[in-house]
Amino acid sequence: MRLLFLFIALSVCGLLGSVVQAQEDYSCMAISEHRQFDFWAGEWQVKNQEGNKRYGSNTVVISDRGCALKENWRSTMGDTGSSINF
Image: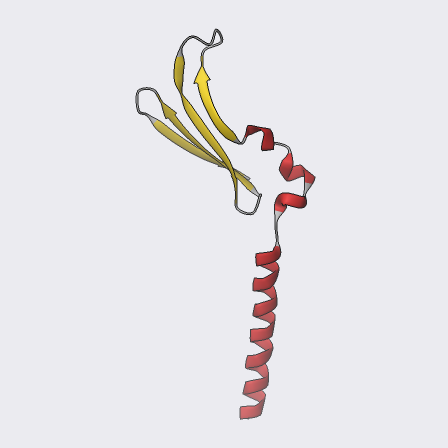
């Protein structure tokens, strides 16, 4: 009975280890569909069309192994916002 329990425990640990390893190795960086908005990543100054009035700043970073874009906005009046796009 103990041998059976040990066998099952080791099998489950092996399967879980494989799943964890697969998750750690997964990255969207090699998937072209996930690269379509990479141009948006960076530091941006948000201005009117004429470029003479600043409304705020925007920071966009590639995150979560390349699977998401995180955006942080701050207006010149101190208001903030954020978004995550998968």
